Amino acid sequence: MRLRYFLPLLAHLVPTLAIGFGSVIPGSCIDGVNALTIGFAASIVGTCLAYVGGLWTVLRDRPQR
Image (cartoon, rainbow, N blue to C red; front, side, top):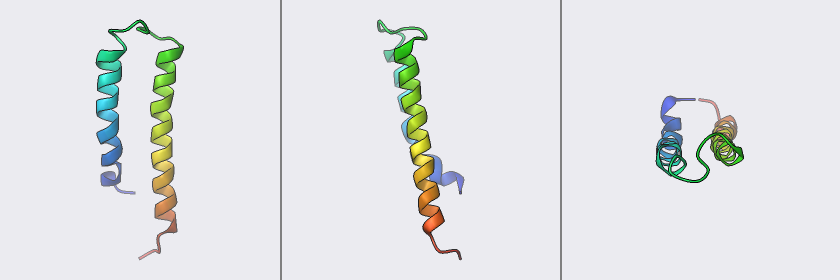
């Protein structure tokens, strides 16, 4: 796997983390570590796992050069 394969994931993660943990959560009633912020973080981890799993599946099915 090449680093450039992860650029779309980074393009999603950086704004999601910046907006979520940088401005939305600190200014809301769910501020702090609680079930809602842990759930948000878990959804981000799930997104990463699904992306890497998809990459792995596609690259595994490609014929070798």
